[in-house]
Image (tube, rainbow, N blue to C red; front, side, top):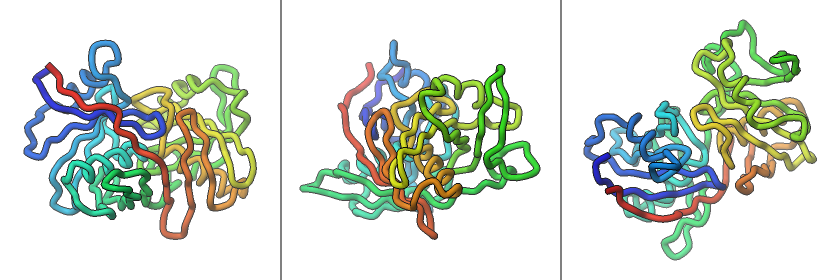
Length: 274
């Protein structure tokens, strides 16, 4: 690995390595991600966030998971990304248009003396259409029963920036590693993230996520959004929901124009590889 400067960040425990590539100097982002994210021999992270110039937005974000696979969108990652580009002076606006693989996302920053304290992201609208997820199904997958290794699961699947499958039940009934079995089911040709969601009341839920390409993580922003959408569609929660995840708390609001996600972004440290 050639020497490069990086910043380690996290959003509610979902941790990333941010690198700048404004001149498209990196030829192999997949290998770079695997090397940097290795927790034994690299920096360690759930993925890398690459800062790139944009022709359509204020700035572009490219996300590569720890296993080298591409991700179109990441809710916790984009909050960290917005904090990074603002505090580094790359984009000097408190409302930033960020280009992603899932289109342009709007980040609204809460800034105190030049430091970004909180970020709200307009995550756009989810879709349950199988072809868009993609999923090999004739009809939307909503409350569908499946059986894997003699255990039953009731799943709802949508595209919330990336594919997400939600299981609504008591968290004690599952180990998050069970998501590994669902992630690579034949009906999901590009895999799926898997969220185990427990409803506490109409305004609070608990979520644990198995992330496609990263495994069990302390937080997943798109997964929190997908979980609230699934619960709201079934009438289990209201439109404003506090989501408790292993790494902290996210606030999700379902609106007619899109799903709004608000949460923290934290800089851990900066460094340079040798």
